[in-house]
Amino acid sequence: MSLDKRQNHFIEELYIEMHDKLTVYAQSALDDPSQAEEAVQDTFRIACAKPDDLLSSNNPRGWLFKTLKNIIKNTLHNRARLNNLLISIDVDTIEDTNSASEENFDFLYSNIAEKEEYKLLKRIAFEKCTMLEAAQELGISVEACKKRVQRARKKLQKYLKE
Amino acid sequence: MSDSNKSNRDNYSRFDNMSTEELEEILRLDFQLPDDEESDMDAILYITEVIEKREKEHPTGRFTDVQTSWASFKENYLPYAEDSKSLYDFEDTEIQAGFTKTPFEKFLHPQRKRKTKRFAGIAATLIVILLTGTLTANAFGFDLWGAVATWTKDTFGFSTLSSRETMPESLQKTLEKYEITSELVPTWFPEGYSLEDVEVNETPLKTTFNATYKSIDDEISIIIVALSEPLTKTYEKDSDDVTVYTVNSIEHYIMTNLERIKVVWQTENFECSISGNLSVEEAETMIDSIYERK
Image 1 (spheres, rainbow over the protein chains, first blue to last red):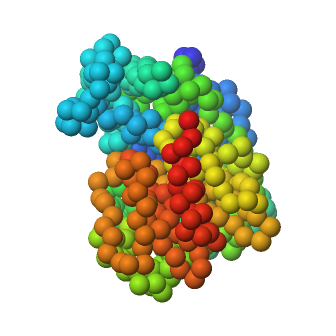
Image 2: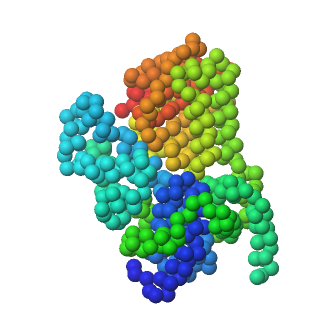
């Protein structure tokens, strides 16, 4: 959704006013400056996706805090789930021990493996890399990076179920 | 300024005299509020304003330049503003916004510390068990005290998301919701016990599942901690008061203290424990049942 001039101006002013305050809150919850910064950016991104909700709120500042809080909870929850999914199969461990079964080799070297995708998941889950950091490393947009993570996660879930 | 606004700001002015650490702790506690409890956004805004003002007067480098952040926002995030779901929402959960106000006094109410006290109680119990028996931290051949200290620090120092399942189907089903399918949960319990509840606490470093099974006059607790990284440390037995029971190539340490049994073991990235009024034979049967399920 593209913003009209009024919405754009309103959100920009709110950004300048609220960025540091939201950062304080995010840092208290996440204890990682990069992740806190990304949570704040994600908050404003959602504000831009829902400008009518924000503008019609009787407390836009409170709206932003509430949205930030939900974003952080969502982030922590889904990182933990991704973590648990990945722990169950660690490609590096399999390669190091040379004890891979034929099934694991199929996983490693089939299209499903796509080691770059798997490494991306590990960067996000284990190394707490932000979506922006991962995107910049890969030379892609944040949106494309998220889609890669979603795709890789679904493949891994499907593989583990089979 | 209206009378009610003035009154609120007069109330909030007590935050001006608190240290930054105390204010950050209030923010952390607010973050830990259950979903059905709403924050006092005016108080949150006041507190963050205080911290922001202090940072501007005495910079510590915690803020990036806002114009730099705005430029990054326009370049990296705004183009993706079609999607109203969070960046880390890999399913289809819509982020909720909107709020209702509750008085800020709840932040300072003693009940807000309930979760913290509960974890302090568990940590204290664990320490008592270690002190009163012949076990010491070194009996396991690794830094148990460090683990407790780290755990306690983690509980107090990081945000904790908590949820409690009332009428939970089973501990196994709860684990599966978090993508955990490893064999961790006993399927056999002594007669008379049934699942009461499952509490889940999430921090950036780990997720803790605390299941309580109750009988008429006693209870069994099962705690499963899913760590964010695979375990590398191992236990070593160095006491005659500890029985090592190996099943499925996993060593389960059974210890007794004050007529209560505690079983601890590690597998994959999980640290697990069972505690309750059990006999050693019952504990072994419970352990066997973990690996007998199909």
